[in-house]
Each structure stands twice: as structure tokens, then as C-alpha cells.
Image (cartoon, rainbow, N blue to C red; front, side):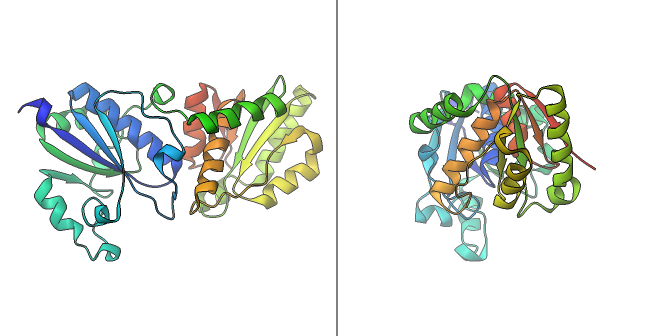
Length: 279
């Protein structure tokens, strides 16, 4: 098979961190196999923002990002009621193998298996929110666009002290985080850090204003946070989420919740310690 004529089509799904790790891990495998990657970026309730409103162009050759048009829901989106299941005909006719969210599980985190599959398949379609292999080089591949980078730099310069610790408290739609990582554990961790260093500050990112208010009430000026929309079904909410992710990456370490890819990605970008709090 001529590698130059081969292509992998990736539809990353889920929230910001899920999509980022899927993109970088599949891109790494494509580079090892010497195959082009096309990313089709859908906007939906999980992430309703264009790719380039968030990121710079990917730092890699042989990769393109396509903002999904309406017709692409009949081509590249998974067969669902919304597209009358019509995309299954396009996927079957245009790809030699289709890896959906359900049947890509055996390959998750096994990069060599994915590299082999890419090498053996002329036209491969992947839909995933998972890391399909290593994505430790995410910082070298993906970065916020110039506008958001300036916003992040300005915030760090104005608010972060000599030592700032990241705190990410996931609530609302993540039952695992709510049950396994109660707020009391974060309060205890913050108190412990203040006992060690009374000047330390904490950047708090959360999808719950109630959590932010409670931590501000308890720890006053030791807490740095912002009250902005975190609605994933809006462009502004997603831009705020990406800003939070990169601000967490600029702290010296992160306290996070069970089952959150958000803090995993932030810690990798910043090459910092992640402490997952769990009962």
C-alpha cells in the first residue's frame, strides 16, 4: 500500500481535554506510521466552539482540521437519530475500517496496535474521546491561539504569586467526581498547604459557582478565581474553559478530582504534579 495515498479521519468527541488527548495521541500514531491525518471538528452541546477560536494551527505536518459543515453530519458524524442514521452509508462506502466509540476501546492506550492498524488500513475512520496512545507531547502540538494566550499571560502576571497551587473541583455533570472527591477534601488540602506556607495562593477552577463562593468565604484573599460562564454549549463558555485549563497548567501543582481528564491534561501541559483527592 502506498502510504502517500492513505489517510486517517479522526472525529474527536467529548469536552476539551478529551478531544485534545484524542487528537495528539492519534496524531502521534499517524506520524509513526507516516500517514496523513484529517480531523473533523464538530460543534455540539459538549463543545460548541470552532477549533481556531481556541487553538493555533497544530504544530505538525500532514494534518488538516476541517470545521464540520451541516453536510458533514450526514458523512462523518456517528449514525444517530439526529442524522436519521444516514451517515452509516457514507462511512461504510468511504472507509475500509470504522472505529467508533464502542469498538475503539480495545485499542485505547495501546499505541503500537493503533500504529499497526493505521499502517494496514488504507482509509481509517476513528471517533474517540480517549487517548489512543501517548500524548505526553501535547504541549508541543497544541497551544491556545494568540488572543487566548495573551489573556492567560495577563491573568498570571496580575494574579499569580510566587507560589500558586491549582485546585480543580468538578461538579454538575460528573457524578464520579462528586461522590469520590467531596469538597471537604479540598478544604483539608488547602489548610494543609497554608500550614506549610502562609503566603501560598490557590487558583480555583470549577464548574460550580457555589464551590468558588464557599472557598472564597473560607480562605479569602488566598483564593484566586473568576466567575464566568462555563456553559459548554457556548463559544464563550468553552473559551473560558480552555483559559482555566492553561491557567491550571501554570500553577506549581494541581489538586484534582477522580475521573477528570481536565486536570490530567493540564498537569501534562505544565509538567507539574497532579494530586487526585479521593475518599
